[in-house]
Image 1 (cartoon, helix red, strand yellow):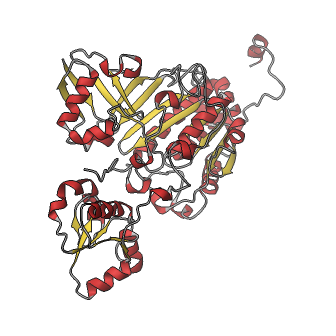
Image 2: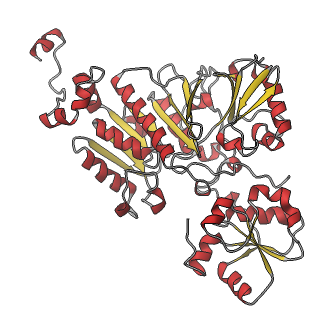
Image 3: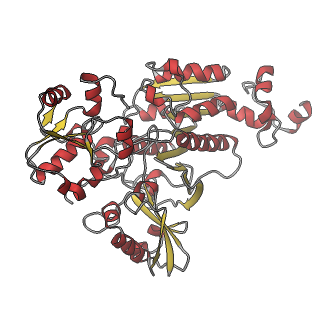
Length: 395
Length: 105
């Protein structure tokens, strides 16, 4: 150790050193020349901000904490829900109902009490993003919506901070590093988001829990490589992961000279209104909700009990029908236009889905197609479970 | 030229659930035309109403983005792979099987 010190510039007095405990904890890093004491100290000095502690953030947080990233910031405003546990492995069953930040802090501190954890219980917005991001070296984007993705991208570009990106959709994942000096940003890849009509609602879909695990771990690996300054970072490359085919592919990602934020003549020089940019008005985009005639679960039950002839149209997918159903006739929303002829417009029809959103689209479509005696089951099969038959499982 | 078009997971339901489709084409535009005439439901996902490729759908020939080649006029060689890569935002839950529903058709 003494010999090394004489060969190098003297270390500043504030240089953090590893305690005996830490040396033991990180010994599998320390014995690797690619990390070693220098690398471990870089990790200890590193400040990483995770935006989101969900499916991507859970494995990411666990691995960054375990690796000894000295300061870990987490932005989230949600509480732990039962349906999170299938993939958000940082939380346990006893955490259901707790604030995610509180539960994550407890779990990560237990995993590694040597690190500092900063929590920001807020939605990341144009007003707070720069202030929150400013203190960190690297930002990791584990969000789940387009407005926040563009916000994180723009804030990182404006602050000159690398943004470790990961995204998933069903069985497919994407990862890259944006905002690296000289490298492309998210807007170079996709200048604009899809219009809201094309963005599926989270809860309507599904995800195999392992997929965000894999993509989140790729983000963790890239973050650690950036900190160590080792290896070839995922800059200028878009990694695509197809879980069903178990294939990784890589595409070239170029810096767009005409990019509105990182190009040669930027037109975006400060954070903008991202909800507006993504075509969303208001937090939950209520303007997108279709207004159609409705019937409540209780009313429907009364009418069915009375023996009224009502045709129940279930517009969910086949696999959802298998979870629970109201003995309805299944025509998935996507197939409805082709299968309209199966419906009898002279009968009374009640359409339903899980929550009432897809069936509202179905009712709107059928109304335009000339159906007059048609209602949407308000709140869907979830409301039926709440109001009529609690034995129907909610999902 | 025989080329392979790789269909991303979210769009496979509109392409007979196939991972990839083999086609004969001389340019990217021809390949996408052939693809959308075979699977008409795909068209609205790839093109806007004015017939332009949607800005959140990128197309690559092998590993190159066609925006930096000759866009849809980019020539393809025998055995090339064309990839369609839409933007995805999922992080917590992922997206739905239903990407788009138009009441007009």
